[in-house]
Amino acid sequence: MSAEFDLFVVGAGMAGTTAANKCAAEGWRVGIVDALPYGGTCALRGCDPKKILRRGAEVIDAADLMRSKGISEGRISIDWSALMAHKRGFTDSVPEGIEDELVGNGVVSFHGSARFTGPNRIDVDEMQVNAKRFLIASGARPRSLAFPGHEHLIDSSDFLNLNRLPERIVFVGGGFISFEFAHIAARAGTNCTIIDHGDRPLKEFDPDLVDLLVERTKKTGIFVQLATTIHSVTPTAAGLDITLERDGQTFVIGADLVVHGAGRIPNLDGLDLNAANIASTPRGVTVTGHLQSTTNPAVYAAGDCADTPGRPLTPVAVFEGKVAASNMLKATTTTPDYTAVPTTVFTIPELNRVGVLEQDARDSGADITVRHLDTSGWYSNYRVGETTAATKIIIDMNTDTILGAHLLGPDYSELINILGLAIKLGLTTRQLKSMTATYPSIASDLGSML
Image (cartoon, rainbow, N blue to C red):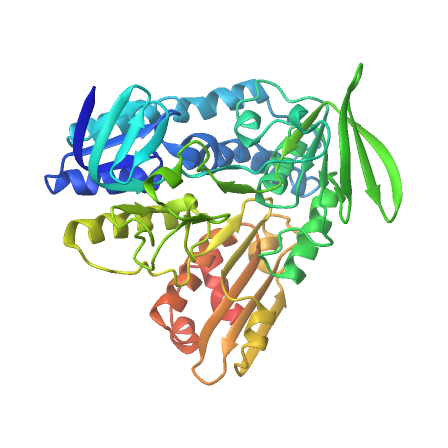
């Protein structure tokens, strides 16, 4: 069997479905395929389910912070299976809803594995598909680990589907996944350890605020092992033994579960890009600034599987999908605008960034001032009992505009959006200070942070 399309999309996550719907709306015959349920990582195996589970941890932490401040000493706890059922109340309906929308817009949906067999041809299991254009939007997957026993680890998708939490969990890697999941599991009563090979975790974030978050993480009861190498994971009668090395010393810790949080890579395995003359790097499909393959003009790529300047974030995938679709439809070369995209580590409290790091701003030679403040004693944090909060805002002295903003504190993930908008629009700090915010609110602290 065979089929013909104007556009065929590989991957039914946010980038792929955005582009498919946009092109179908313009009358193109569009097909889309995914081997996994429609919805992609964010809606099913990442951002959305994670933050639903985090809500349980937020409630626990909020109560703990208010002990002796009006909240009784009686212990509240998370019913993990009920919280997981609450999560599934959202995720279970996502694939059908997304596929129904696609089909309703005229997109032909396929379920299966795709493999290129020519510059304008791809096989979906036994179906041969010919298309004038392709969009590769296949997302990312956990990177491969090489130490003996790595096959005994579970990944982030598995964690988000656990029906119960064991007593001891070790998280491998010092990035988003390990910190966010450990903060959830620890509040649910699990003994958690984070193991990071480097000296500092969360390397894309401000080091001063990361140090504060690490200390807050430890106070939560999470062990953080930095500059530590994993040599092996070995099953035992009691669970798993993890052999580690730090400062030349080897030691063993036990766990019931080990979770892979050591980074993700473009999910391009099995696509046979060479058969379609599609160049790629370890960062993804090699594309021009307007997201077209550098070696096959019939192919575009967007999202986590594309080698672009954008971070692997859902909002980036969405706007790359929109730009790729627009460029295909109009035969234009519009480049996505990556300016001022904020990013957040949803620990408790959360860590946020938009714009440049302080050291990068200094290295650029810009005339800057840095407003670095301990906000732990400010009213908005005192009110909820939080004792770890700080901000760092980097300002260009010549233009009075913000180059970078870094925030650690409760609900600062909302405030970082205002600062991102300010960077994107070139607003001055004087203009921001002129805003009258509703009071008392987190946003009403902004003027004092500047």
